[in-house]
Image (cartoon, rainbow, N blue to C red; front, side, top):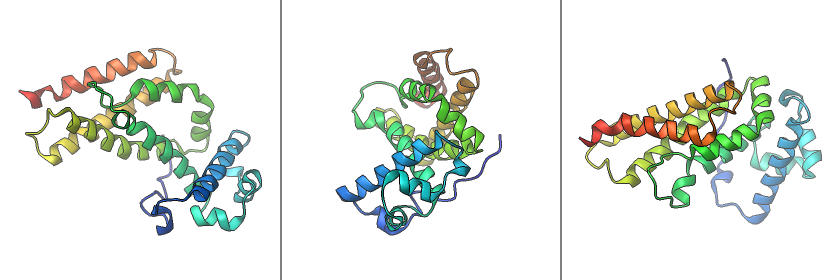
Length: 207
């Protein structure tokens, strides 16, 4: 499946967006993001213009460009917000378990948003999602493995490599599951399958 590489991410957006946002900025970004998501459910991504977003959100052009470079940046921001939330979910809620990623929760959410998956696929933007997800889940899984306290004797680079491989396996399972119709196995069963693979795969580190 071919796709375009993300052209902009949180790492290379204008410096003003790295500051702690005030309530007005948060509100503006939410209005623009919500407007964009509604519009791409109504027509193809390539047909949505910045002007369409401005009119739907009820904000000015200068406000848009204060927060986003262009429509592509706005799309990537929405994907990043979702991935940040999911990849850090277990750590943020202090879950005490052997899970390294919220597989059941993520699969359930994505499975219920079938139209969004088709929108990204039709626009040839699924690879943008998976490329970003690889980085976010590598970090999230690495944090969970560190939190487990079971990998203190392996090097940082080995842990990062292992986390990257596990993130890749997770996304491979997600592709497989979505291509099958996102119904069977259930999200809970996919969670169990993934974590069985995780702990069998890293068990040699614990010998």
